[in-house]
Image 1 (cartoon, rainbow, N blue to C red):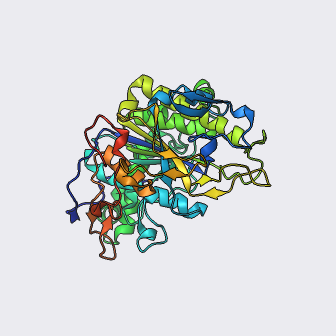
Image 2 (cartoon, helix red, strand yellow; image 1 turned 90 degrees about the vertical axis):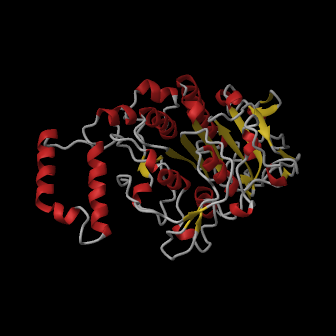
Image 3 (cartoon, one colour; image 1 turned 30 degrees about the vertical axis):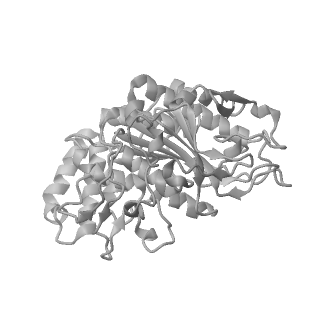
Length: 433
């Protein structure tokens, strides 16, 4: 349970450089494909001696696409921009997954206290929260390895929940009490009458005050029809999203943002794509089986966001932690770890229907000196792009680190080493060249 917002009070010393921000997104849906999908079979399709005919590649408006794997997403390509010149920093799953979520090396000096990008967004947007909004600002769906709030208050931690596609009416658990609403309220009032002097601004310290804020946050979600509407769903909708846990997470993400109850960042985990063996097998856990779930969930999500108008104000980012080796498959029939990968963006004014950046025939990134600082893109650039889209200055340096050190939202961004991929918004007048 995330704490009630507005916990961090008082002036915080923040320095930054003047930048032009896109400021086109109200919300973010970040989809992390755990286990590292094969980029040259999916978002940067390239034929290889091992590519099966079942992938059915087609060229759609100049974009090569595996219609045999992602047929529904093919219809969403006008809304999707693919960034192909992306390199991870590490080839260890846990390290690279966390790196992508915090935008820096988890093994570096501040790595163990660095917050999730979603926690930064939650904190930065705290002042925009309206009275009566009861949802946590940062929600983690299908959560497995999601990074936490670091040294920030637990108010900005991801509220983790896995929707049950098999029981769509279940919704968010533990929002009622067996004794009923009236009796629950009576007990809650009695509790406060007995120990408010210890709960509120507690003389026992921050841990006790934090517990009180947990209680208040949870109480706001109980007996609340808005909560039920956002976290419950119909069997028909679950089927439309693929009738999987991932699809249900995409559905709930859409509904949570539509509720406008204070959630600004939703992270969805989906894996595993770690296919060292039998990648083209028709069995469960293979490329075809995983892609079917991805295709159903993401295509329905983008379609619904577009139809409701939410896509205009919602940035959708989809990426793994790294990519997979290209060309012929290994003797085990799989693909091993490789730094090169691709990232998909949609919404928030992004111009879709195109690929940004290039790769050679072997699927390795090539450098075009005319865009994005004349080099391949790194996870820190993805992080800066999210912040820019949300109107957050990615060069901010906070000086409330518990060890007295400056915490950079994006490392080295003040030195112009990392920054947003403004080519995603070609009509904005902002360029990185």
